[in-house]
Image (cartoon, rainbow, N blue to C red):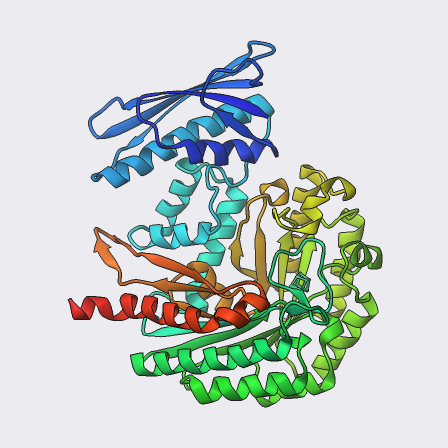
Length: 509
Ligand code: SF4
């Protein structure tokens, strides 16, 4: 859909315009010069509102072919600073645009003008200086979030504070993410660093040697900085792709290097059932792994074959039972809604089988067409459900979890997610993943080690009236093992420099 945007008054909200248009049309192109081939013309006029300290956005949308026109006007408080005014202008423009596009297409957007990944983070920030009732009103009226999503957000935020009461006071501790970039095969929808373990992208041994060193060096920094570790998460790829002996050696180095006395949770994303063996479960138990994931994604064999997962439904069930028999009492399962050729019937089967196993937690993803995945590159080969059916499936999954005692405890959204929906983590009481909450809410530094691991370093807060600003700097490690093997020393040095800036620069000043 080509849309001609004509702006008067303040500009600088082009991204917002694009993100809102994208909610309605899969392929969106915004142009800022009149062109005859634009299907829609949108006039955006930003100016002063009806009273002092207010901004307003007037939006007019015209369909080129029919001349049909829709209008909207929205005002809001401008805020005290230039930065706040900019934010208000962006929101006012987004609000008006969402309204005219909803009128034009007849589509309701469940998340209103929220297009970011972490709506719960926004809610936590609002909650710092407002009652929950005021927060709900703001979400409904200022962000146009639908009632069911407001409920979801508030339930999750309240639950998170129950599970981690010191969520806002964890800045003398960090969490660790350790990325093992190998998998037995690559799934079609995957964009994680997941290289075929039998392939040639740098040897596994060379990668592990680098990772041991990175663990030792970063552990030394954390100890010297006097920080504790709250959670550890082994992800990837699939960490259980390597051998039991290799896993054991990594656990050794981890425990020798980091202060592990404050660790509240250690998770291993065992993920692919075809990598799980008795000896690996034994290693995980020996090192006191609290939580593992065994991910079916779907219990329909034809789907697993179509997405290249190379394991069977039976294998998922068998490995789950093996882990249980060996004493793993906190198992997560990931499911994906909207996989190719899947509708309500397949979802019902997946939920039924999940119900027979009753994992302690479930993460329900909605399929997202990520740019770099094989599925996106060959999009026409995959038949996926329509927007309405996706919404229906998500509702059915939410209802199912509720009936079985699971409660939502974290969520995030992605770009290109089918039907503009979300990914939600559900857990039985007391079985929530602390790492997932900490990572999603960005209240603590996460140090990433290994391939594709992204560190997120939190700088000291600058307090403002009833709220605060905080710089967060991302630092990604290389995704490819071959690149990691060559450059991990350089990455360790840069990461330590960044951490020193965040934790010690203020003291030096
Ligand atoms: S198992 Fe996970 S990380 Fe590995 S290829 Fe599949 S989606 Fe990617």
